[in-house]
Image 1: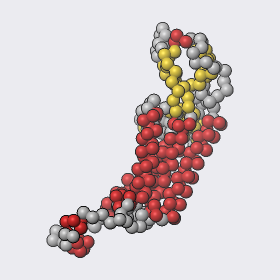
Image 2: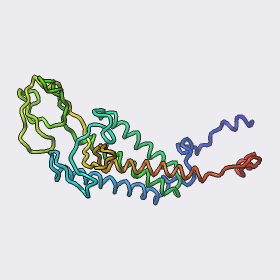
Image 3: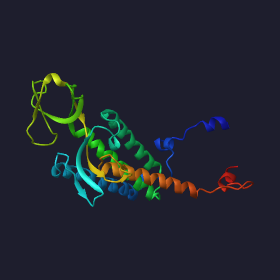
Image 4: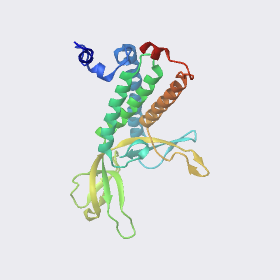
Length: 260
């Protein structure tokens, strides 16, 4: 067999790991690394889902926020969009994006070394944040009601709960997640009623600069976990890049020399 034919022969033991080129000490083959990733993700996911349930069970449904130390307010808010309220109504797109993000996190974990503990913590927070909001978009449903303009009243779209038959006239609509008495809306004024998955938010920072809020969005712990996880990854890769050895002109890397 000549060298060319031998080079084209694939060893029988070569499998998916050869395609992915996992490191010899891949974290996905290391049980302590697996335990670290999933335990952090499970704890952060539990905190997110528990606080959402507590907030929507305890807080008033009307806009009467509760203040914490004058810096944070707790107020119920339903978000049909993505992180911090972006992309209103694009629920299906964000469900697919969340699933892709989860697969990418698992891929990064598999390609990492068992010694990269800080990286694993960052991936765990991203995993928990994506799963927390994915649960809400898939399981928490509400109606987006769009009203036509009437007289001096402009058109309006709001999140609510339709009670009874949505084709009745008038349509009975009330605040989502409450037992309040529904309000009648004339059927001719309703442009559309769409059922969408929504994310439960309840935290807002009351910080301002020159009279303008620095962070006007209402968010949850899943958003915090995503932000913290991405921040950890950015800092980690920045530090690792700074530690990478630099070769002076005329010097040869020992690994390169060994291959020549």
